[in-house]
Image (cartoon, rainbow, N blue to C red; front, side):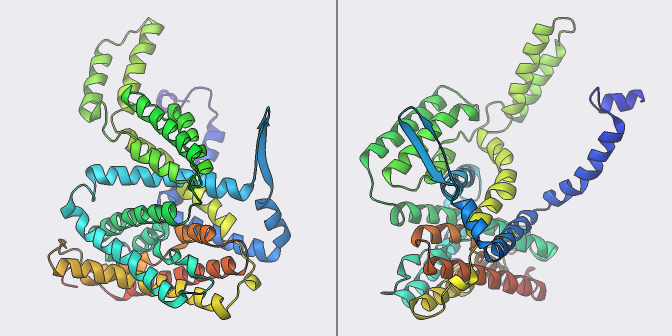
Length: 445
């Protein structure tokens, strides 16, 4: 082994094993580096759930209803695996949503009213019009509780559509879609908290307040390590569960409370590294560890905790949390859905809300706001481009499935809602890709 080879790899590695591992990992890394990959993984999990639920129905139901829990003295907690996915694992998804909202409000597309005006108008239209279409079709019917199901946008699939279209789509349209999706998530969170939570129990609110106070105390004391916030975060989660508010909201709360300013920043990192390297001790291991700890602290705090957590958690959410959620919730026995009576109107309401209401609301409200000079639209954000963003916004999937689980108990209505979400989102994907391939979105369009 050459000197240069020794310098580029850790000691005690074996070259044949290292090369084999690199050969296996390289294509996987290339796949995961593609932004649209998360949508492909989500699609694969959905197909797997549908096949599993229809071919091996008993094993599918048995797995997700498997009780999981534990006991400490007189206290025992036991819930089905489906609960831990929807109420536990999805809290991580909502934590990332809260982090992204915090970042966008601080320095992103929501940092000023001028920046936020266009995506705000698009998001409001994209939530109101589908809800109105659904409500008009289902008022007084058994499926009326699902009015919020077509309001949501699945960011993984939506961004994936724009990514697949490549250079046909300007970066400004991607920014508009991302900002719209963040506001859309805020709307969904409010809807879940207000309309799909049980009656509020005050003892739960007391726990939430205690956990929140602990988080604020840690933050005021300068505690920056994420692991320190797990315990108070768990208190908030339990408090929300006890109170009757959906516990995933706790993830959003913690994300919104995360520090958004870096401590050292890039310049502080450079200065700290230079000062420590200038006097790096060669013979004293204890002093060397102290210098390296200071360098590591500066490296970690070169970016804000918000940015650091988004960077760390985003792959887990995209490639683990959301696919597992899809696997647990997209599975439905196709014969269990009903397309007659009130169920038919539920189906039509969701499909029409997603495939028609979302693009109509997004395009009409955003273009209307720019025409009335209530929002600024750059030359790169063309009218055709806004329509494309609206079509991509009609892919509800993850959040729509989540809201459907809250709106309906297990049974024909829930199965019909799931089928409608799949059909409506599928139509939006097909129409969005077709429109994106056929119509140019450059300036003047």
